[in-house]
Image (tube, rainbow, N blue to C red):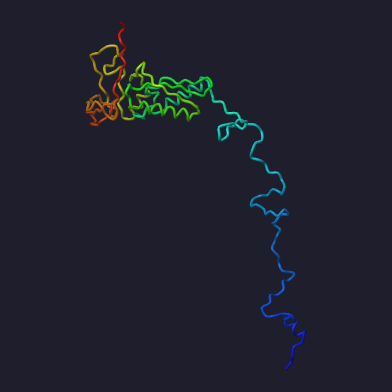
Length: 260
């Protein structure tokens, strides 16, 4: 039998000290993981970041003083921002309060309805005093009016709002503006007749009674169905031409007492 020599075993790739199950030695030329993407400082590149290591990045926060309010309502200088004042601001607040819708007739604002009497701003701009007059002394919506006005003015930046109810002079349907009357008619509500049921100035009876016009078709042939409708301020009527029912805002006229 021929025995293989050492050189024969080397040619066969079997080393003198190899054993079954032993792992082959790592080649000196084996490829190593690419570490070119790792920086010298040990950090890896952030995707999309091209600035070199150590380069100053621009700051998004300004270091100088500014009057822009922060989340707490204070400017960066640490002083609270002074609220705006003056007649222009007061008129702006009046427009905001006038636009608050009536709780019972939301198609019309309190200004066009005539219940908003005044809006006064304090000299420092921190308080607004509002006066409203309800349509009648027992109006159940007066509290909702006051709450809605207060909320609207606070949202406009007024820290303190005081709403006061005044009953003199009393409210009259003649206080409704022409724009308010158009808004009522556009919503299918018959607006009150100017000067009351008789069309007069409110200082005496007039023999002729003005008809109530249907807001849907314009006919004056209307019939009273109920003196009260959805609210105490409205009555329910029906048009004899188009046969449609509609609400009529009842007239409420203030008649001044005779002197003496």
